[in-house]
Image (cartoon, rainbow, N blue to C red; front, side, top):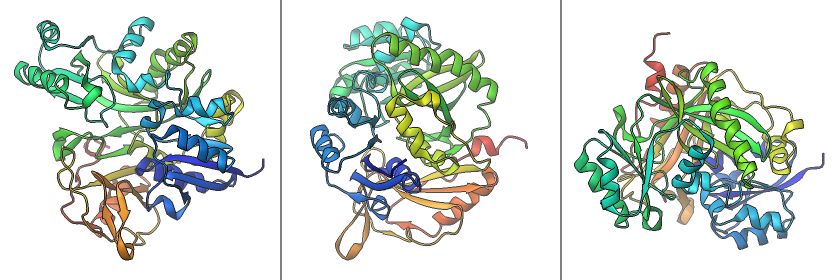
Length: 428
């Protein structure tokens, strides 16, 4: 196969991890990222086109004669980038605007689950507080309140009591998340442990693409507000092969078949957030892209060349593609966040030590960084760096990642010191 020109869309840690892995492929002749970040710049050309500028990205793809466009963030799918690329004949790894509703509208997904009998929590969708309150009367605490649309991973409140639930409903409907909260989804609380399962899809076929376990809360011990993710590890021991097989049968396959039957064939990554309940895995939510920071651990563990997999999915040829091969090692990702994250992150803090040589097994991905005068690296977002490591087991990977973090400084920054605690607390 001739070398390919690849356009990668996005600017976060997930995209840096994808760029790092794509650049290793012997099939990658030219890698362009838009808009990218200082870490991605080490392996790709950067172009200043926003991920939500669909027309600008299509023009860029045509300008560089892209053979493949790889979409990182869900925001690009929401504005119809994949549809516009399809219209000009450029293969895209990422879902259509309609298919991406599996992430961009929680109400769409819950209704889809109901139509197809997929295991998930009981729910209701509301546009006014009075109706929401009447539904809350039928549930027991704690309550799960979600903004219907995209809220950067922060539009979910687990309310411990009715007063907190009512406040969350009023807050969301009152505009805290803008149009994303114009409708709220209220769900029964599901008991169990959460884990994430990934599939790569081409509209007809789905291929298993690893698993991970995220840490959503801001602080140690799973305390504090929900975030976009403070760290993750892969593989998660709690997600056994039997549970993976059950989730595949009861969720992934029916979803791919159901989306195709409804005229919305699903292409790209199908990311299932699972609750491992006493009766088996149930769907918490779908995401229409690689998780962030889950993607970072998957890229470290992926032994295969990623480009043939992405290209086969974009072209509808997964059935004949070689399945991905994985390393036996464990991977971990710890997020270094800016002071005030997630509510009001402080940008501009100076970062030092991120470019050091941490030895084999450690990779630092940039998530929210920018370079100022004289090349000084500073924080430009809430999640700033992803310090990742690959080890013979999770304990070794954790020690490597935290050892590297001790050598990195961010003014006012913080990170959780217990990533991987669930797996590490289990008897060996």
